[in-house]
Every structure is written in structure tokens, then in C-alpha cells.
Length: 252
Ligand SMILES: Cc1cc2nc3c(=O)[nH]c(=O)nc-3n(C[C@H](O)[C@H](O)[C@H](O)COP(=O)(O)OP(=O)(O)OC[C@H]3O[C@@H](n4cnc5c(N)ncnc54)[C@H](O)[C@@H]3O)c2cc1C
Ligand code: FES
Figure 1 (spheres, protein in one colour):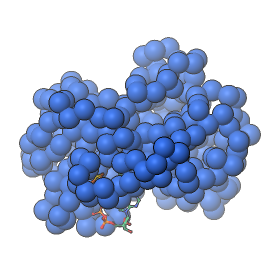
Figure 2 (cartoon, helix red, strand yellow):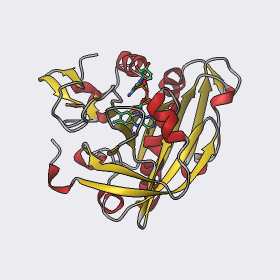
Figure 3 (tube, helix red, strand yellow):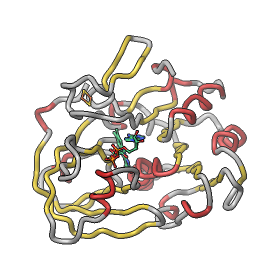
Figure 4 (cartoon, helix red, strand yellow):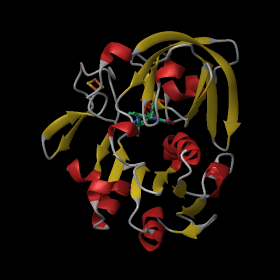
């Protein structure tokens, strides 16, 4: 469970907003959040056009700045995608647990299974593994070629891509490619629920599979119970007990 002693609210200035394929990579200056945030954690961003803050995973960080990757799906993400350099936004973070609360960097390599914008979770993990002299294998599933971009692929040692229409990479679901290539290593996954359901059917050692849940959130800080998810130990809050859970723990 996350401790709120090290969560900050900061006014973060937008340093850049860059188009990456269909998404937007936004970099913020930050003194405290950038220093504290770890791989797998998220921030909660205040916007004008929506009531609740909107949660975004750490894409990567550097001295005094951090970046997120934004897919436009509604009013909040649209507003975020349009922020310009010099604007400041109120951001709370770091929130949620990180991959360091689990043992997934314990082996020689980590496989990462990402659906669409779920690749955002994998970039900082791939960078971390490189620093640890460990290998990263990315399995990235997208719907069609227009969702493809190659900006971050060089961070990974091995890359497998699939698209549902076959426009790029293997034709079909990424879980089918993963099933063929998987060698028993630790796994980190971020994508839609059907992807996790398909992974459950692969009958992996689910203890070795960590998944990041991106449920719709309200408060983001454990107050509203809007993000509860069913686990073997009862309902847990994605914002507070997650967003990372062992696949073995989840009732999907
Ligand atoms: C821990 C966490 C980390 C996240 N990290 C990222 C990230 O790195 N990049 C990114 O682009 N998005 C991320 N998301 C999802 C992002 O927060 C939502 O897309 C955003 O809040 C939508 O706000 P909106 O106002 O644009 O859309 P809304 O108007 O709130 O919703 C528009 C549509 O999108 C759907 N939707 C809203 N939230 C989600 C969600 N969480 N998952 C799936 N569908 C949703 C709604 O059901 C609705 O159909 C993350 C979510 C969580 C919980
Ligand atoms: S979003 Fe309110 S409790 Fe998790």
C-alpha cells in the first residue's frame, strides 16, 4: 500500500509537447515529483475542462523533469494534448506502488506486454534494465498501422509487434505472439482488460506476471472507492493498492 508521506502537489511547467505517432509526449519541469517518482507509478493532473484530475503513468524522467505519453480519448486528455510550453499545471505525485514493490527485475531479463498506449509503462523499465545490464523484450500490440511509431523502440533489446489488421508486424493479438516467444522470464504488462484475460488463459506462472491496471479513476488518492477491483483477497483500490498487481491476485 502506498504511503502518502512522499506525495507532493507541484505546479509543473510544460517544457515541451511533442507529437509521437497519434500520441503526445509531454515533459514537465519538477523539483520534487521527478526526484521521487519510480517506474510503474503515476501522477494525477488537474485540468480545467474536467472535474477530477486525470492519472498518467511515468514515461521517463531525467534531472528535474519527467514525461508522460497521452492518448486523446475525451475532454481531459484533449485539453492535456493541447498544452503549450510555458504553461503550468497542478500535478500530484508520485502515486501508487512501483515495480520495486515486486521482484520482477530479479532475473536476467523481463518481457513486457503492452497494448497501445500501454507502451508508456515500459519505456522507463527498459531504461532501468539497460542500466542493470539486463535484457528487455517488448511485445507491443496495436490496432492498426496508424497507431505505430518507433520513437522508443531502441530502448528495448528485442521487439515484437502485432496489429489487428496486419498493417504492421504480426497479424492478430500480441498475446498470441507472446505465447510463442515466451521463455519463462518475469513479465510486466499494461493494456486493456481483455489482454489480461487472454494472458490468464496462457496458464503462465502468474506469480511472475505483474500487470498495471488503468481503470477509470475519481479522486486518485483512496477516498472515493471509484477504482475498486476484485482480487482473491477482496476488493482493492487501484489508485492506492495498485496500479500494479500480480496477475495471480486478480479476479478478472
Ligand atoms: C494509473 C493510470 C495510469 C494511466 N496512464 C496513462 C498513460 O500513461 N497514458 C494515457 O494516455 N492514458 C493513461 N491512463 C488513462 C487516462 O487516465 C485516461 O485516458 C484519461 O483519464 C481519460 O480522461 P478524459 O477526460 O480524456 O476522458 P473521459 O471523458 O473521462 O473518458 C473518455 C472515454 O475514455 C474512457 N476512459 C476513461 N478513462 C479510462 C481509462 N483509465 N482506461 C480506459 N478507458 C478510459 C471512458 O470510459 C470514456 O469512454 C491511465 C489511467 C490510470 C488509472
Ligand atoms: S480513485 Fe478514488 S479511491 Fe481510487
